[in-house]
Image (cartoon, rainbow, N blue to C red; front, side):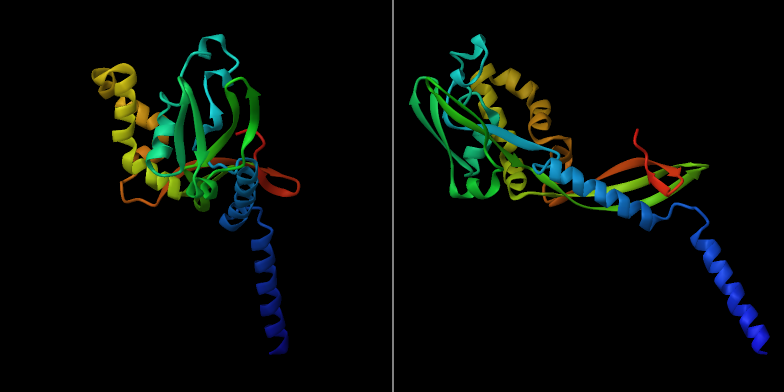
Length: 236
């Protein structure tokens, strides 16, 4: 009886070992590697997949190194500034013709990323800041197809819409239409409203339901099998 029991236990151990060393790419392994890659990407791009970028400080066409921009009013014509002003993230104060003071409100200070790229010259003392509209939350592996030493992993990536994203998307259509009407006239503003809204918000926010607080993107990631096991392919 002891011999039979020992043999049964040995057989079970062999089967378990064979299962562990079968060389198949498991969902847990794929998810672990992809989550690490997603975290690295988030560290490299903390402003998320889409954001609004504006100048703050003393802002005018002089802030740009292009001769054609010197007499341009970058604030009055900015849909991003209009959206962030309407939703309470910045204040816009005219100083003189084509020159503005753009300041972060308390709400804006909490939502904006670090300011960068300082430019200082006549009628310009400004920095860039970015307002993330969404941020990566988590991923789920939904399927794996192996083909020899290659594999394709299907993934669902979930992104959370930030408070800025939730606020600006509610007023995007009306604010963009009003801003473009002043610049291009009512007909052109209406003709290009859909494209301009998508350009400002990104397709994911523009097409998400109005009551959505998150959205999901599908992706397929290539894996390759090496001597040390399965790893994300270096070339996708």
